[in-house]
Length: 600
Image 1 (cartoon, one colour):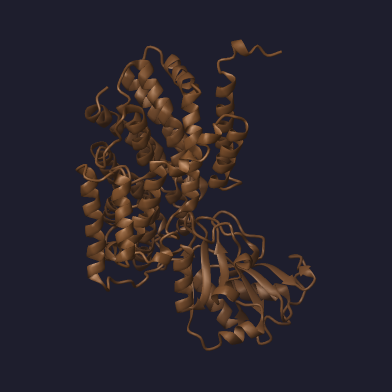
Image 2 (tube, one colour):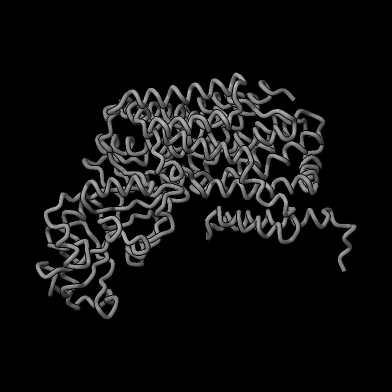
């Protein structure tokens, strides 16, 4: 029989730690979406008594949750007004060298990330960066990862730049009676961002594997990564009646690979090369987008299944568009069939490019994931509307111009006024941001129908669900026990060394977890460590804020890294080559700056 008296944790502490451990395991596993994991954990915590039922939904009314939701609306307003897109487009040039291009794009990305959601900043700049790569006839793999890292670093500079800063600020208010201000993060953040951006522009991009993006930087043309596409064989196609082996030879000449053929009775065995392809068969092919379009035209193949659907679009101005699935988009986790793309939107999902593996399912049945590059076919206006409605990112110049400069200037002015009012103590930050959202709606900067669509609800649910669990970690005394364990292990080390350990541990955790979850878990532990050492909690909280955002080793640590995986053609193991030295640099620069600005 277990002697509870000899255990290092009480029963309540074990309940909270058990829930947190389950959350960590499930988030790393990645089978279920993070918001579902967090909400299920909250429900379980209430059922077993780890979280009081009175506090179950306190996180949904927490200031941190509201600020993050409001920042997302303000970010959308700044981008939709056209000001950000105008600035970005006029600062790019295909004629620049790679280091200069990275330095310019990364600086713009860093600046934008300081005042808006960093995922939104990357989504705005990514099409511009890819367009510049195409014009320069080089792979975007050299520049997308530096851009992603720069937008992450830029979020360190202000309170609203990244969710961990908001969480740390509100936690400080709870513990010490006063939150961090809008620009309290700036001295440390701006130095870390500047040094980090200089590294990725001068040295870091050279560490990206040459195999990334299947790039051939010395070639004459830039080739897109391969798509898995689904094509139909019509009556007029020369493939009708052709043996599979001959069809494969014809496809090879067009740089297209036939992966499988679906006939009425099922898949053709690839070894049965003598089998004849007939009208109505479906070809599953792998091809680059520009080759795919030529291949379809040359062999009179189709993108659609039904003749009456083809007739509906006969003579229409069709557009073949690439777009990437961003975190929180409405297509994430859904298939073309479940969305009824043709019936509801009049467009087709022609192909999906998912780097690192071939899609074995029929394209229309494949669930779309963050980072997938979609090849969409449809009338221009419909594809454009679909991209905007679904929150996915077109991977080409969008041709947008600032048609109403007054709205762009008005959006920027309202936001600047709100930040100033908050910084000087005239308005509480959530109220200032809420006022901006109201004014953006009244002035038509953010249409009312888009107001709720701009909020990434999975992020809101994640934060709101984990806040009560984080509070239980502290109220149960579990954070104090964990903090004491860290202090005991680092016995004899000076406080600055313990601060470095906390920063390194938080950064490591953030590489495999959502940065928001990392901040919520690490904040109470860091404060308890500081109290055990008898020093100020501020440098420890600042260290957690910086470290929680700096996830550069994997594509899953930060949503920006996930977003560029498909368009950049990166593998999971490509990130650490530039990410590891960058994380070391952030720690080496961040710790002295934190101690200088926030003394122990």
